[in-house]
Length: 221
Ligand code: DX5
Ligand code: ZN
Image (cartoon, rainbow, N blue to C red):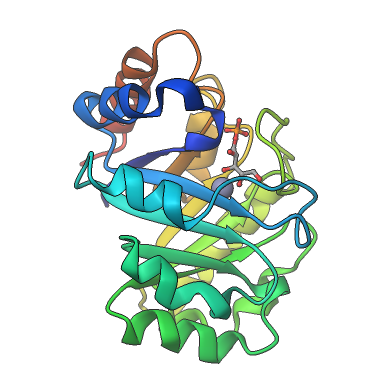
């Protein structure tokens, strides 16, 4: 199993975005987690296509776009054009989830499905075989810097069991409240793609990135 770090730019210093992206890129982060918020599915508004297209010129790392927007199918093509490699949509935000997953994959991108803390993993039952990644939210989406909700790790275990039971080797991403102090619990539960915002973009994003990657080495066999 491989393990990937996905630093969330939401916690970056937007006045020095280029430097911040280069710091985590050069330190070895494999993904860049891009939180798109519409002020409707979640209370806040973050950034969208122009910002993503702008940073696409700085790095060739995987652009992991987390769509916290209502009916994200409306933006799949725009996200492809501005450089998304992987688009994750919330099951709660899609009236036609199956259609949106197909749209993403037909656009040549990888597809992820996200579940809020209170959404049961049974919501994945029909689509699990069609997705490349499941995102288990470990906080209620909308803001960085929140505390991880412990029961969500039981959901990670349950999704890994569901995947194993079907012979699937998909990625499980966990997002919210993860730091070097608690990341082992998340990895032990079965996650292999870790999002970290405030734990990376503080004093020294490159050093924090390397700290996570050192911990991943304990799991890579
Ligand atoms: C929350 C976002 C997260 C957020 C994580 O709604 O989806 O990606 O940036 O931030 P931390 O790691 O600070 O909880
Ligand atoms: Zn996110």
